[in-house]
Image (tube, rainbow, N blue to C red; front, side, top):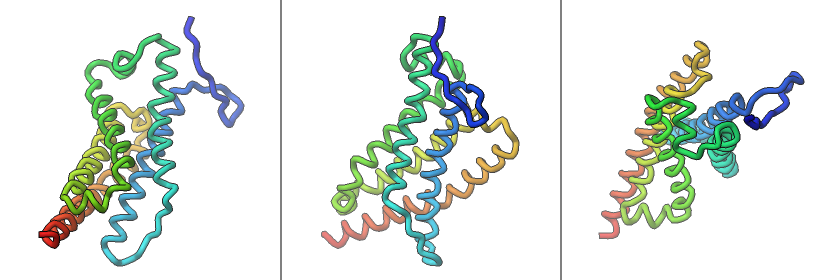
Length: 191
């Protein structure tokens, strides 16, 4: 007999945790997307967008809750630990989408660890690679969601998701180029 975590839905019914965790993943990605988009708007100089420091904490919480709830539910349902619990859910052909998501989550957590040292890492030329890693992680999460995301079966949501992805690309490119340029100029000033 499998044990299942149950949540009460707003309509009074019961829904599986499997319906909640895609929502958390979407919220996490959209929160990070909004941070990059605000950065893109700020780099244009056209409008200054103030983004609160706490929104990054919300993103980290959502990033951890998304796979965390899934892992708990998979363990309760199958008694399997990762990576086997993931593979039994998405199938062996989509296991790569889980692997890139795990690497992306590690990258996001590394960013939070390194952020207090940003100024020093810019001066020695390391920060642009952290920025590049974050951009690749955002793309990885996008690919993860396109591959295994159940919400994308709804056509209007898929269109919205692809639109956000296309808007994100210039922001990622601008951010990475800006960080490389800043690091290069600071290194040049030190020499």
